[in-house]
Length: 134
Image (cartoon, rainbow, N blue to C red; front, top):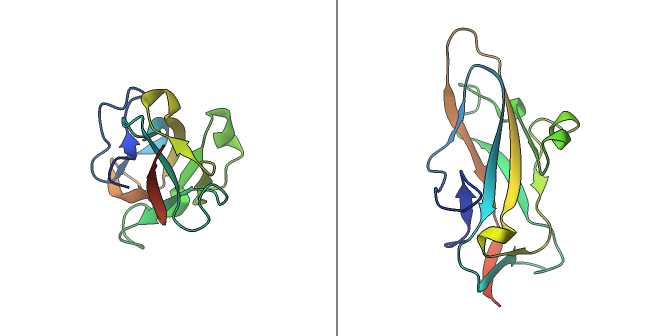
């Protein structure tokens, strides 16, 4: 997955580096997943084009700081209301390169820690995928 990444903008110019920041309270945010390489597509390494690609929420330090169950993912903002906290998000079976094909990923975080605290031990991951030239 060398060319596909999570980005902070729809033009795919600013790569999300590091873990998610989970600020105090309830917060909604928007990321994009894609690649600037228009000649590529991303599919599952096993069953390419058939099996869905999933974004999973990973807790690097379970029991300390934020928990995966504090994060909801959806492809629309309104989808956050019915999303299940801590659950993976399907992005479909094929993602094509190019900013126009970037997949929006809405994120709702709920920080249950008391006091002014920002937790940074949560990451978004995609596994078992392969880039193909189209």
